[in-house]
Image 1: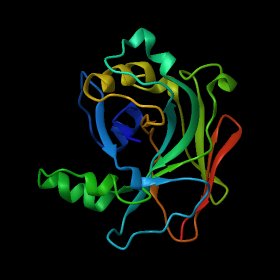
Image 2: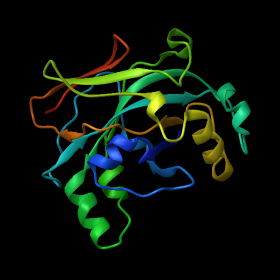
Image 3: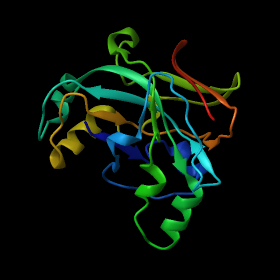
Amino acid sequence: MKIFAIGLNYMSHNIEMERMFEESDPVLFMKPDTALLKEGKPFFLPDFSEEIHYETEVVVRINRLGKNIEERFAHRYYNEVTVGIDFTARDIQRKQKEQGLPWEIAKGFDNSAAIGTFVPLSEFGGVDNIHFHLNINGEKVQEGNTREMIWNVDKIISYISRFFTLKIGDILFTGTPAGVGPVKIGDHLQGYIQHQKLLDFKVK
């Protein structure tokens, strides 16, 4: 099982992070399978970072084997969706970028890919107009809609499949809008698509 993730896919987040540039292709990175956090298990703050940030994202799961998928056929390769958190060690990421070094350790550490319960995409009428949000301790802290993506899901899947064979069970984090921020011990995170709560866990 592979975990793919897309960076810089919402202009609002790019502005928030002061990253104003144009890319012709999606910004792709990966997390190892040990990054997966599911079934409402708690997220334990790691001791190697002082600045762990949440990034709320719509997540889709691949349901067919595919390679070199044309964009017009990409919709056939997923039929479930959920909401997830791409946890980021922002201080480590910043340091690595300043030194021109890879920043996998800031994104791919254990339990850095929290996912909720997958539900049929048909419940939302498609993937290109899904509203999602994150509450922390009962307060809404981040929200977005997939129609705001720079690269939509089908474009992303087509692009990824040029380089990697997609397999059943692979997971795709599709990018985060503005509103990212830190988490602390005791925080209670709840992620929603529309009004349906799919993600619910605590930080310890």
